[in-house]
Amino acid sequence: MASHTSNLSPRQKMINLMYIVLTAMLALNVSSDVLNGFQQVEEGLVRTTDNVAIQNGTLYDQLTSYYQNNPEKSGEWYRKAVTVRQHTDSLYDYISSLKQRIVWEADGKKGDVNNIVRQDDLEAASFIMLSPTTREGRKLRESLISYSEMVNEMIDDTLKQQIINEYLYPRMSKKDIGEKKTTWEEANFENMPVIAAITLLTKIQSDLRSAESEILHTLLNNIDKDDVRVNQLNAYVIPSSKTVIRGGKYSANIVLAAIDTTMAPIINIDGMQLTDSKDGLYEVLCNRSGVYDVDGFLEVRNGDGSSTHHPFHTSYTVVDPSATVSATMMNVLYAGIDNPLSISVPGGPNQSVSATATGGKITRTKDNWQIRPAKVGENVVITVTAAMDGKNQVVNTTTFRVRQLPDPMPFIAYKDDNGNAQRYKGGKPFAKSLLLAAPGIEAAIDDDLLNVEYTVLSFETVFFDSMGNAIPEVSDGNKFSQRQKDSFRRLSRGKRFYISRVRAVGPDGVERDLSPIEIIVN
Image (cartoon, rainbow, N blue to C red; front, side, top):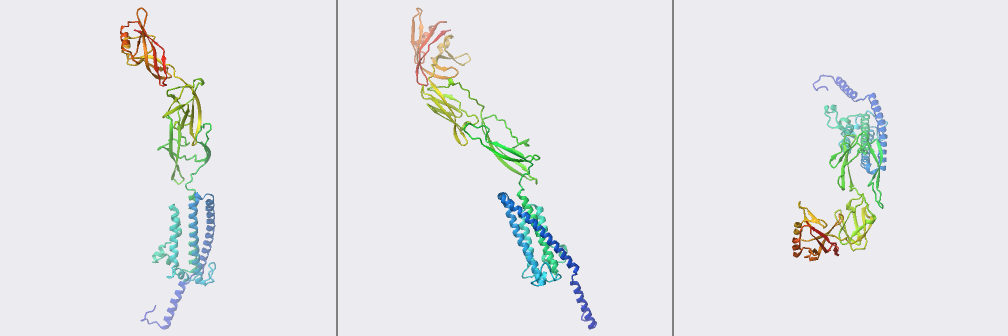
């Protein structure tokens, strides 16, 4: 501009002023070629956005189908997809309303976004987006930031998060920073032709749909994220037991097992890893009977390098090998004593077995059983039950005949040279020293089947004098009397005497006379 001290004529000053105005008008004018270029970009973005929207609709349909078929597995991801769709459509519609308002500001209320008349208008975009009253540009920036943060919380993939931020997060270019633009909205909408502002908003809509597509793909993939990839399906029958007692139930789980033959899981049992777990075969040597638990987990590697643990628990029962061999004529019990019994159920643990008896009293100590019959001649019936499938079931009923105990054998107890307890039952030489050391006689059944002690009540010793006369001497209960001991001292080697009239009582309470024994003094 000319200074106040200039000597230019008024005419020259007018020419200079007109030049300045013309220069400004040329600077503000946007060529038709540039405007047409924006129009072509706008049309291309619209087509791209429509295509992405169609693809997104297909993804929503797939998520909906997954949810309808398996809501438990896909419910979380389906609900997130619904939220994404609502926020995306809301933000998309908001941007469309901004475009319409900018066109109305340029072309009037009849303006059409698809047919803009005043494409080179430089005021309409600034008026709508940068107005200090409405602050639509600021609202748009904050909406894009809020949307990016919302969807990033839904996914864990940092690469996907970065892609979405690249699409949507509003940033200022280095050029705008160099020109000292203060905000993103000023950098993009200040003095911007209408067609350029509309194209920019359409680009944001296109980026919004692309970001939506990335999110939907991620949510769809997350449904099967924890699934184990397999290449073989096998059917298995897993029985609770392969041994079933008559009257019980055979139980088995029939399952479809999916395996990956190229990558076997790692099997850990009771804190130890199976060295060769490809076939999943677990074997253990069973040396003791009882019920044993098996706890562990399978570690399965996923395609992304992570792994998952799948715990399991089972138990098995080890029973002693058993067989029942019985002779029909020998099912005999003896009255008055505790008869030992062996009761077991093959295939079942001992703690699940119980027994009752009629005609006698049955008792149990751990795994040992005893039966005491009530009286001679009355049969004893033993009924064995076992707990199977949660209920008690009768597995055996056996009848035993009850007999009186056989007569015991009287004997003289002594110790041999090695200090071992021995029983002298007569019929062979017996040292006089051992005879004199013996306190009396005893009686017992010791036939290797029964070992029953009797109490001797009384007995007699019979000696013979030189004339052949029998001289009886009565005992002192089960002890040798003093007269009997004196007679022992007078005996010479090779002499004999007899112990007779032995009376004894057993645990059944029956008194009985026992057979005599012959003593040969050595």
